[in-house]
Length: 163
Image: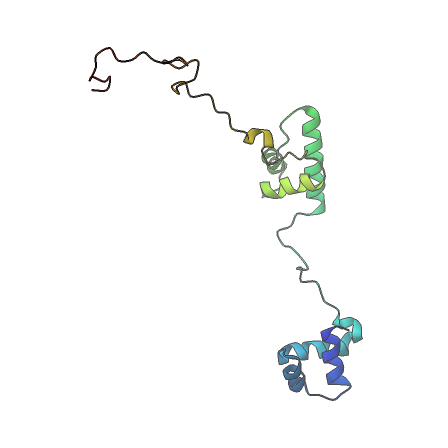
């Protein structure tokens, strides 16, 4: 049994006041009042969790516009023309749909319709292997100026090549 049902039954059947129920169950009085009001209006079904999603979206696109976006995408792609969201927005504005939906909305619409081929965003793991060439100045390297062979001793004693 949910906490909401327990609170309402404590108020309705046990005779607790809404304030006492709020203190006992560590919730606000306003929430207890809301639960009791829902119970009186709809019974125990009114205590089920409700969706928090907005009922309407004033900036959403209508079904005819959505259908036109999908139609333009398929028509432009079949013709071999650019069928991206910016192009579709331009075509919609030329048709008199003013203002046209945002480019991000058009992109989301054609993606949800399955008209966009998904491409990976991550680099392949093979690209993470770093290439490093041999150091040409390192002694022992066959291409080193000194070569892999031992160098001859300095012909003048006491002088070094770094002086």
